[in-house]
Length: 167
Figure 1: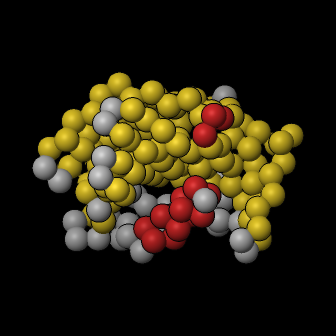
Figure 2: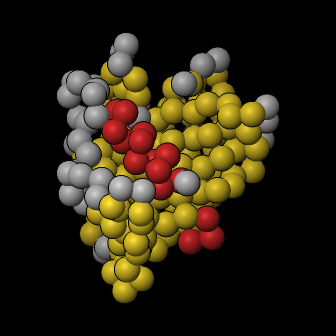
């Protein structure tokens, strides 16, 4: 289910204009290479760092990072999780090495270690900082069918610091 939700988030945000304000950063290593992704916002069009209350007391968080300072699907990274107070659950990470959603790398649940080190809520915005460590597995999608290759994995260790916008 998280795969489908993450994929739809990327499709929805594909309509964002290329000019954007950076509201956060994700930095770290992916497959032993240093990376930096930008979390962006375009006034009136949306943001790639968002949060929303899904039921009372449960908040869904999505932090999508893009290479450079403009929206791009290729080489994008999404970190998602659920907050209940300060407790983190259901973490998932999605990395798209090419420009489409038919092949990507992902990790969910126990395959992701996510630690939230700071959270502040200010009206319709939230600020979060934390770290995520995961082994991402290559996944192919054909319609609603998914297949994974457990031999094709990449390791990820990142820090994130971002403002999030309420959906």
